[in-house]
Image (tube, rainbow, N blue to C red; front, side, top):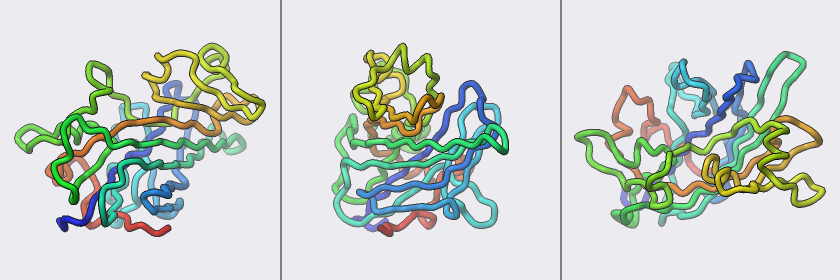
Length: 236
C-alpha cells in the first residue's frame, strides 16, 4: 500500500423501521471533498442481512460480487472533514415513488492518534475501528461515543408526528432542527428539510465523527468489504 494514498470507506444506509416501502434504490453518491460523483449505473442496493431492516448501497462490482459499502482512493494528506450526499429512491407501489437525500458531515475524530500521516483507512463502519480478534486494532471509538450506543449514519423515515413533537421549524423554507439533545444523539440529525407535508424527509443532514480502521478486516472474504482494487478514484 503506497504511503501517499489514503482510503475512505462509506456505507450508505436506509433504515425503514416500519417497512413502509417495498423497494429501495441508491441512485447517486457525491462528495466534493473526496472528488467522487457516482451514478445509478455505478451503484448497487441490497440487504446485507436478510433478517435486518436496513438496506445498504455499495459499488456495483463484476461477476455478481457484492461490496459492503464504497471505498474511495485518494492521494495526498488525509482529508479530515468531508461530506457525502446520497440520493435514494423508494417505492411503495408503482404509482407511489419518493426520493430523499441524506447528507453526512464526517469528521475524523479517532480515540487514539492516527498512526501515520499517509496510508490510512478512514471508515464509518465501527466494526472496522476496533478490528477483529487476532487481527490487530483500529483507532477505537471516538471519545464522543464512549458509553453510548453506536448508530451508523443512515436515512430513516420521520413521521409528521415526529416532526411536530421533536423538531422545530426555523423558517418558511421547511428547515427543521431537533428540539432535544436526545434526538441528536440517537440519529445525529442536525437538520431536516421537508417538501410540503410529506411524511418522509426530502433531505436530512447528520454529523458523524469517524475513526481509522483495520486493514486486516478488509481481507476477510466473508465480510464482503471492498477490495483495494475496487476502490473508486476521484473524478470531479
